Amino acid sequence: MNFTEFYNDLRVSFQKENSFFELNGSNQKISWPKGSGVYVVWKYNTNDAKNLLYVGMTGKFSRNKNGKIDFNKAQLKSRVNRWTPYRFAENEKDSKYKYFFRYGPKLSSTNDQKNIMFDNDAYKNNVPYSDIIVHCFIISESHEEFSPTLLESLILNKYLKLFNNDLPPANNSL
Image (cartoon, rainbow, N blue to C red; front, top):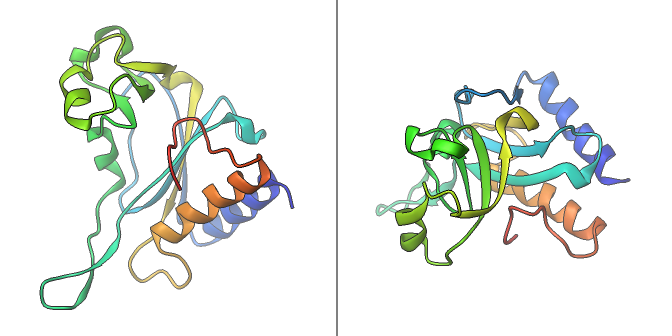
């Protein structure tokens, strides 16, 4: 099964559960769906796996101080607060690159990158929102089959194995 078939099967299964959202880029802030899960950023269209830019997740299970497993319920909308390895640039300070998906940070230090994140040359790649599509797979703590970490890993692993040990360009690790 090729990557597109694999990905479309996942998409259809989440659509049947009303847990899939497609956000088409425009020159305005992204209106994220509520919830946690996996988000997949595409350039132009989703028909060619080479258009896949990034796969990420939010929401995870971890053990608390009392030894109990909790789900942190982090929200997809919090992704706009990141500055590495990518940025959804929506701040007035972004000037020229406002409403761009920016990736390939100039600096390797997270703290140093934070200090320059609004600079025009802070990222190697800049894709206007009008050219991106974001797919959101909503995964709650009670999902019967997936956790956000598992689905993110499955998508990235399939990509890695089918494209000669490569990852989407904005992903740095699996």
